[in-house]
Length: 410
Image (cartoon, rainbow, N blue to C red; front, side, top):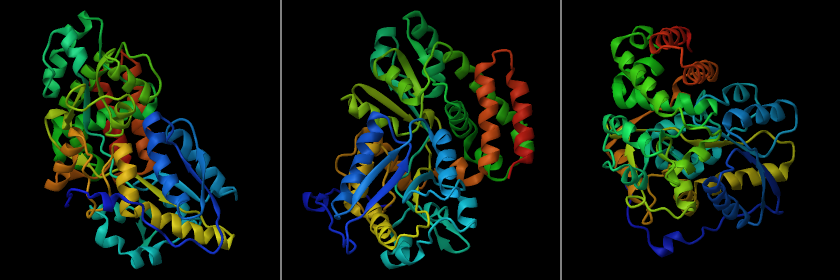
């Protein structure tokens, strides 16, 4: 994937042909933190520039909170004009039920297959040869975010890998700093575990477990090492009493916590707080062990509408989301990477450049959402919520249950 220097002319707004009449479109999503709100404002600004109107339908909480509401509205006959889902199989049943628009004609006209990279992103939008969504970014989970000030206060060097981070925990605790920030939203515990699988077990183990549903690998010694690390993470996070992921990020920003395992969307929170990558905070892709990123992220689906004008405006919105200028403006604020392989980014910070370099090398994996059904992932999430909140549950017991879930997963 090529990323070059972007000229001022390239950054200028791109004009789109608006439908005959300006139209309001309600767009639902779960981007409500400071950094996320700044990013979604860029999408709204780009669509409004076409003469139409973005009507924001933000739903507070996480995807796990928002998705059931979105799905209920669509299946209940009250669809929004566009809605966010993650890359993968989350909207599969809605597509199969004929409730989502087929975007194949737009995709072919604009050459999406030639510009969307990696191709697995568009593959996740495709069912039976037809394209049903617009991928807007590449988000990777595989990051450890560190407060440089916290380690300075504790008198230890900023870690360069997971083992050094774990070794620094006693000094951090002695200095009154929580080693690991972890919110109570269910997906955060599961995310941390998934990152540990890739970082410490490697991509082969990750693909065997999440992709091939290999129960023997899930029950094996390599995975036992991962569960031991999850036990360390659980111990290091015991003083982290917050709910939302961005609240946990703010603990790192303020130096109350030393680190957080979180996706690259955390960069948006650091940016809003005026923090500088490499100076105020550090980032370790793959926990400093295995530098890979996943090709997960966000995509927008467009429910079938009876209103012809709104349907025409949906086409404009889909095109706008993938326009070069929109891709750059949105992803710089979001902390994610563009899905287009032909856009240029000059304002990328040190951490974003690390992600771009890993992506350029092709060190990528698919996200769990692309490999497992939503039902199976919910079972995994539930297990790790239980594990992180039940000190009496041993790593061995958790691994046994995990292997059983993998064996039955689809």
